[in-house]
Amino acid sequence: MSHGEPQGNVHSGKLVIRNIGLVLSGALENPILDADTVVSVDGRITAIGRAKDVDTEGANTIIDANGVTLTPGLIDSHVHPVAGDWTPRQNQMSWIDSNLHGGVTTMISAGEVHMPGRPKDIVGLKAMAIFAQRAFENLRPSGVKVLAGAPVIENGMVEEDFKEMATAGVRWLGEVGLGSVKDGPTARKMVAWARKYGMNSTIHTGGPSIPGSGLIDADVVLEADTDIVGHINGGHTALPDGQIRCICEGCKRGLELVHNGNERSALYTLRLAREMGDLNRVILGTDAPAGSGVQPLGILRMISMLSSLGDVPAEVAFCFATGNTARLRALDCGIIEVGRAADFVFMDKAQHSAGKDILESVRLGDLPGVGMTVIDGLVRSQRSRNTPPAGKVPTIVQG
Ligand SMILES: [Zn+2]
Image (tube, rainbow, N blue to C red):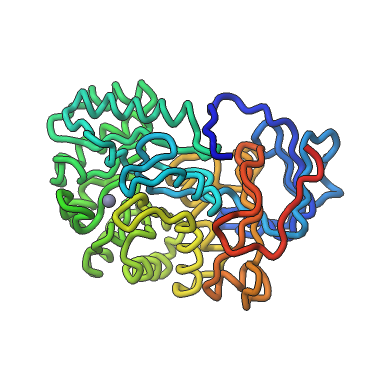
């Protein structure tokens, strides 16, 4: 499954998943569903419930979950893709396929900033954003939805530039602060233009990530007013706790916690969000590829770390990487709900985990074992080559 494929329309037919042990919805308000069966047609969820109440006739594909847990496909809110399944950052191949084996079915680009020779002039950066959007739209590595084409704003851009990119299909703004715009007023003006034309935005919060990048402090973050406070726990150098608190209290935007950040600051942010009753703002990313490499299990590791050290029920921590991200990024996946994309991960307690079930195993800090992934109603991978082995795995009984 290492080849890319065109996105196109999906004709996956009717998929029936039966004998599910536990359904984690991804929605914070109702994270565990009373269901053992999920049905999708042509890549869209059409029914969720008990087997006796759901129409399972005429399936093209039947998966017996064998009692394992079904979650929405995980969403990595912060990646830096470049071209296909290659990254020049650590010169690795197939890093996206490896992430699929960690349960990630959707990735959101925070800027294609590792492109060798990346253009920083305005016509060049616009062309590259449109190119990246097209390239990943046309070819999904291993089926993973890589939502790319995320320009990094530079001084001199005008409203017409954002209109032009949005009209051409660009939906995202890469990390504000990675380009020449590092002041609050200019950032605020351009972010507002991007939002006006339907683009969702993020910002580089904290110290420089590599030589050449810069510091973005709480004042700039709050003034820029991006949809997402990108890596509020630093990328990797975090802001002082007082500034993190200012950001959490000073806006209602998404609070992104990344694997390639400061873990103590991530736990501090989580604590603030919980105290404020704002857990619905917490979303997860890896910020990979980066100086610390790529982490195929990065999102699962964040879920487990935040649940075990941050005192959050596992079913809630899963929402940080699914439903919360879908809501704040306006995606049609991330929740097991009728009408949404049929993107799923089958997981089970890893073999020999001390937890009595998958939720307790995550609460104890272990990683779950991935047994299968489905994107748009099609099976994309089976027993993960990267997670600890799942106790039980699903089987394809037809299709
Ligand atoms: Zn960054």
